[in-house]
Amino acid sequence: MKQIIIEGNKPLSGTIKIGGAKNSVVALIPAAILSSGKVKITNVPSISDCDALFEILHLLNVNVEMQENVVLMDSKDLKNALIPENLSNKLRASYYFMGALLAKFKKVEMYFPGGCNIGSRPIDLHLKGFEALGAKIKKTKSKYTITAEELKGADIYLEFASVGATINIMIAATLAKGTTVIHNAAREAEIVNIAELLNNMGAKISGAGSDEITIKGVKKLHNAEVKVIPDRIEAGTYIIMGALLGNNLVIEGMVPEHNIVLLNKLQEMGVDFKLDNQRIILNRAKKLKPTNVRTVTYPGFPTDLGQPMSVLLTQADGISMFEETIWENRMGHVKYLNMMGANIVAERQHATITGPTKLHGEEITATDLRAGAALVAAGLIADGTTIIHDVEHILRGYERIINKLSDVGANIKIVDI
Ligand code: EPU
Image (tube, rainbow, N blue to C red; front, side, top):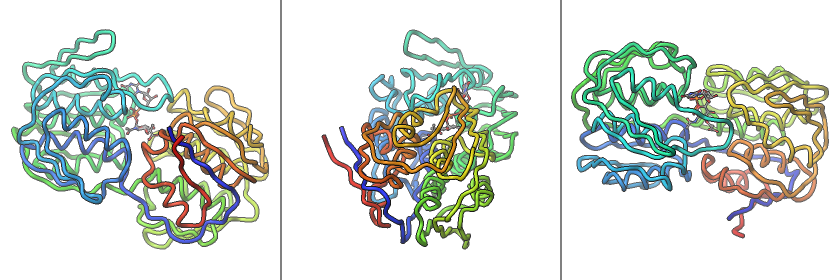
């Protein structure tokens, strides 16, 4: 068990370099096993979610080497195996092995995926997609068995533009016979990155990044290389911290277009920032205007930045409204922000935030990954000492967060308890 301890109120100056996107790499790694040869993935972030996927790769007899931020995978001896509960429930993205193993072996057996407790998280849209491709699904109390005699291309209409379902169906359809069209597909930048790897491996996918993706099935995939896109959520989290405490804080290596809605909001609030190519320079503003934030699917305001954003709203001068529309349970951090002195009235997926409120250090708990990031932001602006429990959630998705923040002046450390 680990704790993060922060002495707040230190200005942030210097440069934070953004790493590869968690939500991209966790799909790239399972997708890579479709290749009959070697796949090189560069700009891989050092996060515990990747370690969990490597454990599954070992079980599947995939040779994996990781040096610095480069992963080399060789799936020539890939074997099918039941993915046990202790591995599947380490992270949500274990479910991408469903699409990949189904495509390769026409059979996959795995226990339910895990992930942050931010809502009910059904995977019915993934399963309906597999069924449309010809698969049969057997679900027992905690395990799925999915089999197919053959996967055949199909027209698939998603009821909701689910990121996971779009990627999983795209992966499964890559080796199917004939053409698959995913209608109402999710449009996240990460999906474009996964399609890029699959196409580099010889797949025939067009339309990724739009709401209609066409996959023409191919027989075999070959060696390939791909670079993980910069993590727009990591970038957004540090941008928000820069808005709170920046003293010429530079966020480097991001793709500004991926965070355009966040940047527009910050501009509306009067945050002092300057865009310079793939960098953004932030300074703490004297006064922030309140605003309303509603999380929606990409390219709208990302749900994964809603919790860190709510910390910024506690510092705005007036009343801000916050609405989370993707997940039912993303207000886990509110109780702790209020303990620290915030004035937030939250009911289910809505919150009214009245600011500005001075925050003070408290002993608090990260209930999920992004709640944890929000509490780190709160600890950084609080008077006194903040102790955050259950920080393993944070380490799942933010690489070297302690080093990145202490290098720019934060007084933050992680301790084993
Ligand atoms: N949904 C269904 N049925 C499904 C799939 C999804 O009803 O079969 C619902 C979900 O319950 C939810 C909504 O659709 O209400 C969105 O789910 P989606 O499938 O788009 O999300 P996901 O693929 O499970 C990914 C990210 C999340 C991020 C969401 C939305 C990964 C591993 N996770 O989840 O990231 O919040 O997209 O952008 O890519 C995070 O990084 O903190 C995180 C939770």
